[in-house]
Length: 438
Image (cartoon, rainbow, N blue to C red):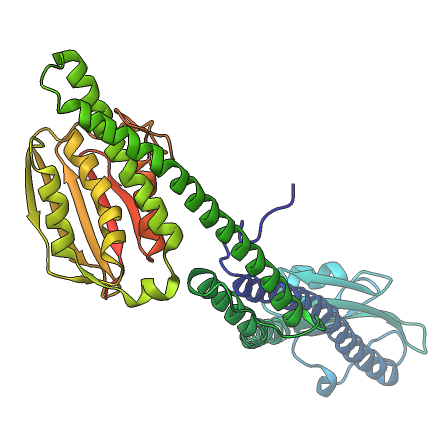
């Protein structure tokens, strides 16, 4: 299964490129640092060995030149610190061993071949056998401290790490700069397309034939906008036609029910049934009017219209207050940037739903949502919404009587004017209607 973009939690595509570039650069610099350290360590060892060999050869040459007969003689001037000369019996002839290493020197003084030995990775020894012209044999043991070389390696490691960090940071910065410039047109296209899909379905980019990635994306977005426009137009046309066809027979049903209810001789059971039919017919008529209003609404008219939130809420509360418990209303006199009828149809089903399930009180409050809109909070003291009921905004979903269209249509109306309807709390039940400010 192919992973989705952003499934690794790296956010935008730009962030993914930057992180990937930084990771690749960091890995490359770490690998380069490792290789450099290995090469430097090998080079250091070769240089130390060469230095030891040169010092041992110099002492051996001096001994060969100055020795006579069976006695080995080495001038003091040629003896540096840490240089010791042994005869063929392993006896120390001259020189001073490095402090604490006399035993290691003596062990190497009897060797018959060139031999190297490391002491705690701090000192390296070399034993160099030699023979004089008179046939006398001896061994030169020379030491060299490794601390200066190891310090140089540490400095090289620090420089490599700092360089790697700087290179990684520079690569990430360059990647950020490049991706920002490269993806800026894509972001503009996406934002513009989203805005057009909400407010102006007739506009298109029209950048010509797809000659590069940007024009190809623009052509794809134009195609998508065409499909969105066609889908919305088809939905609006279908909604309008269905609502129009249903409104006439529904009006006849409601009118007939009201006329029959005017008869005084009706039995009680028949009157109750007719009253239920009349109420259901009115509810269906309000739903159909909402659908027609949505289908007929023009984007430019929606943007230009405004209404008073107080007047809308007052009308909704007045229509529901009879026999529906008490309402506690505390809202600001904000202006909503949407037609009054649509705001009414977005708020009324939510308040009606709260009044239906409230035990005693429905609370309606409002606040300004960070200066970008108005929030209307509708709460009730009812039993709350069960945890298993997650699709309350889906058409047909209801926890009581009715067709389960009220909240679904209310959310659709709120979204059509640039707002939203959300369930903020289940127990107590709180719905939040977000509407654009005028």
